[in-house]
Length: 476
Image (cartoon, rainbow, N blue to C red; front, side, top):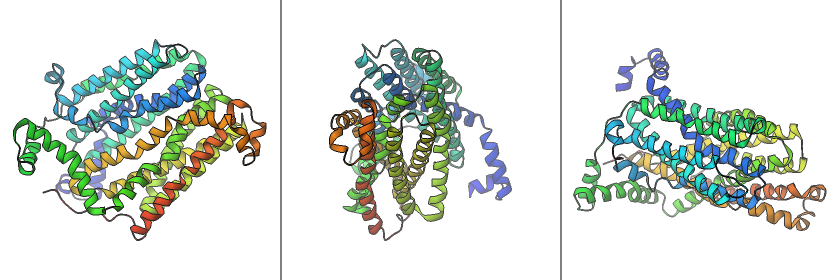
């Protein structure tokens, strides 16, 4: 009702207010922060594997670099620290949220500096440490930016803020997937990494210029602890936060779903397994047959936009046909996308096949991602929306990232045992050794979606053929 009164209570005024919200200074700040948030993760997933492949690092070692992205799935562990502790000195000038943003961005800059001065041929372990620092600092930046966004903008402008964030994120995807390979081809990978490092200054400027949100104390957590655990003071506040943030959301979820909750969590954790595992080896496979400019054009200029198209189509499909049908369609599309990569690996330098595979896989990833996020949102209780969604978001990517680290070993194993698969995949007999392991690898990643499909069928039957019912429980 408040939003209706503020916007005039009719569609025309609400449309005008929505347009005006995009012109707010905080929306421009959110755009810049979206660029900064995408930089660490997309550098690791898009640019780092190409850099290592060009320096003839083994596939097994390249696969292990997927573990440097684990902080993004585990960030809920240290999020309470960033929520409760104020950085010394900086917090007096900038406040808690912007101080942690800036501290994380300094960590990102240090990680980039370390990568720039490291040689993949002789200092691979050092590169791994700097990449891990990049992932940790990037995840910490995400925590602070999300908290700042929630605190600085009213609820009816969160959609605008998230839209600006996504646009900034996609602009960074273009930089890491397209411009970085172009610069590496024209100059060197050192120049490419320096270019990417300079992009963090956009985020630093945004953090310094961002409006300082109102500070929140720990009174609410203390009240929860005193009421639930009979504890007061600072210890009570900390334990109250722990109970409210981790224990209560989980107990609520299993209270509503019973033992079926384990099946739902297993399905969520395995749903994106095929594309997460194959993603670690996609760019090393590209590099066996294509130039950096060709890779930048296909995976950057084309891949980024078709992913957006897939996400938008996924949103429409969820609205039109429901969440469960969207989940089935998305999983089938992901399995198909992985099979197209097996065909691409067997095709050699085939530009039309490259374009087709990137298009199918990226549309599938965007569609499936939207469907799964919609499903996870539908599972949350209104009393624990933010916390349960954050835990689901951390959990759904964790199995894929853990197995993705072993992807390079799988490619090598398939190459070493090519004779065992030639009866099933006759094309292996004519392929050069450098790509022969990729074909059965991508077929195997496609088949890894079958357990998720089985669990999805069981969940579908449990739900009576419909998506989860909306939760109406409110916090007390």
